[in-house]
Length: 116
Image (cartoon, rainbow, N blue to C red; front, side, top):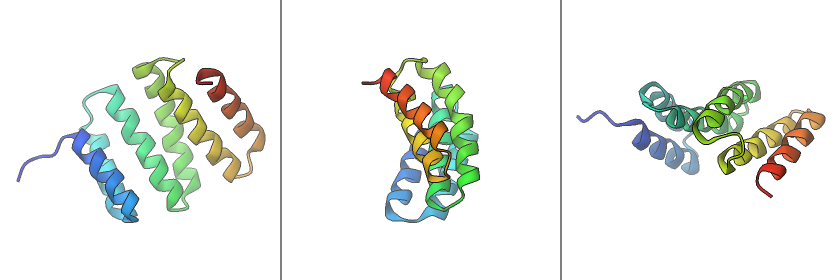
């Protein structure tokens, strides 16, 4: 059996997530993180794990993954990148979901400035 690279595992994680199989999505994304060979792949894996955790209702875990992804995204794509803007948008949504409205507002304002 061939050892799947991180890129393929991330595609599988997203496919499982879209189909509602969150345990399989989490397994694939966790393995992708372990096999990531670049900063960008580690960022994508962390962000995917954040999305999965949010969908599972594990908001503290989602925050942890999103927060871990942010500096990786900044390093991989830059502090003014569309990738960072999209990530900040997701993080803002999570902040609002847990009642951290001031944080959510500041994150979404930053996201809009980055990618109007």
